[in-house]
Length: 75
Figure 1 (tube, one colour):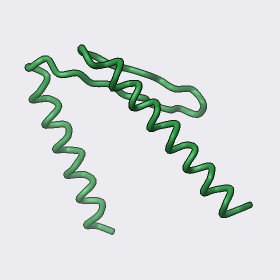
Figure 2 (cartoon, rainbow, N blue to C red; figure 1 turned 180 degrees about the horizontal axis):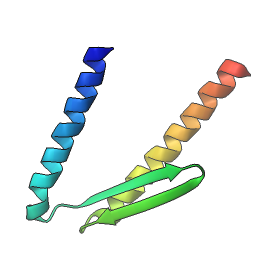
Figure 3 (cartoon, one colour; figure 1 turned 90 degrees about the vertical axis):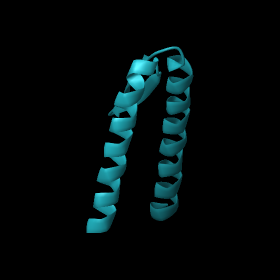
C-alpha cells in the first residue's frame, strides 16, 4: 500500500513539474471538477476547449462505468 501511494505521489509531482515547465512555451490545459452534481470547467490556452471536452467525456464515461458496476454489485 505504501509503494502504491508513493507511486501516485511521485506521478502527480512529475505532472506538476512538467506542466510548470511548459507554461513558458504557450501550453494549453483544461480540467473538469465535479462537486456533487455541479461540474466546474476551467481551461487556458489555444487547445483548452478540446482538452475540456475530452475531460468532460471521460468524466461521463467514468460515472457511467461506476453506475454500471454499482448496479451489477447491488442489483
